[in-house]
Image (cartoon, rainbow, N blue to C red; front, side, top):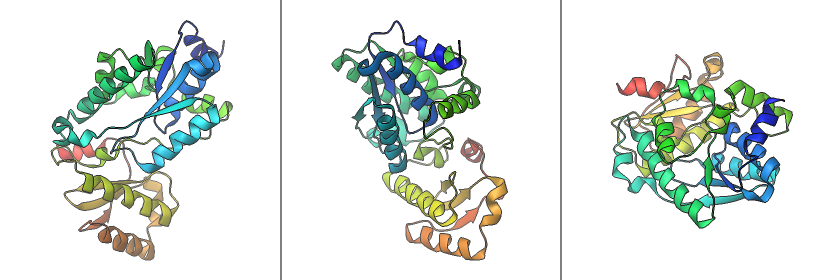
Length: 265
């Protein structure tokens, strides 16, 4: 039995399932497997909240269209949650607790017994308080339960033709703001615009614009830093200052997941 068969069979004894689907490859593969087994009894739910970029939202729509699965959008404003906006080291926990609350309410409306997410084995090795929050709501992780690492997810997603198989990992826009610095709508907007500007001018797919008290620190793969020649950097710097950043710099150490947590310590 292949890994994909195991994942598809995981849904075999479930009558109706709701998949928390972002714009990433992990939840896309879970949704694909669920739809293969359950058809219309599998429903994808995407939380359209303030910290999700428009790019991720559009990707989630495209993925659901590819799979053929029904997609429901959950809309709420996590910026109304003081526990979230104060942005301490438990920000992700508070965010996911609120998400879990909304997902379970929606599941009741649609008579769904099981909610699943896209957590894979590699995620368990990182500091991810949000995973613990979702567990408290009984949300399950089929990729973990069937032994999927990130690389295995990508391989299988590619084999079944999902367009997001090589999409760089992403995280919510609030992760660009160091712990202890408040999350605001203004910051999230300039971060999203900033990353779009850098991507457009460099053609790079994975970009982080960290908002350090109003200063932009751009992170890209270390091997790609040389793309920021004087002309490109000048254009980027001018545009980022127009949208509200005071200063702009390129991080010479390159992109590293979770680096913001180190910055904030």
